[in-house]
Image (cartoon, rainbow, N blue to C red; front, side):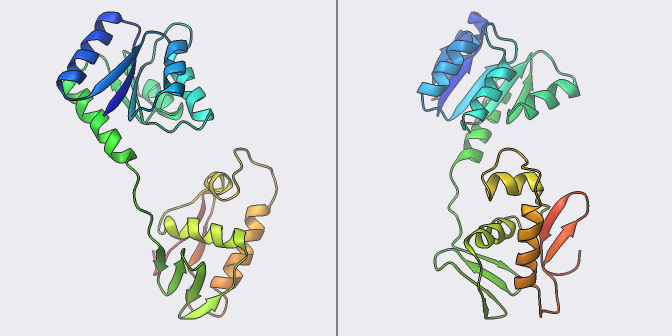
Length: 226
């Protein structure tokens, strides 16, 4: 595992680098937010360990900047600030985990190894099935109870995303970002229109409805009663 450590305390950074090496992992150290940002941009890392209180660019701003640039490398935030609100701010800034100082290296190691495992690419299934609704990603074919359903490309992407998260609430923001590639809300009814069209195609003339609106939350596709 290759780790970037962004830590301004040089003694702590040296300890982490030495301990990581002894655990069989390589690491690169940066001592301020600017150098950390440059290193994260230039290098290929499995995990980033970022101290929250950094000179030049603070840790949370650093994480936000990386996320805005599309960097999805798992981040463990280190901080002496351990209140719930502090942890929430760290996670909402784009951190994947938050560890409060002082900490045991064994716990830090277990956390970054878990983050690295979680980030390993998972093989996408070629087919999604919800009840008698089947979406085949390879043939780009959708059927329900064996009957073909013709979908427009955007409708297919929408259904694929919903079926990938079957049984879970999918929010408007999730749909805008993952189906329409919008990272802002265009304040239109585009989602409602497409959901309505999709519902008419996959649920019309069938006894059981699969596509549900979860009031105030989003949408869910599932078979059977909740």
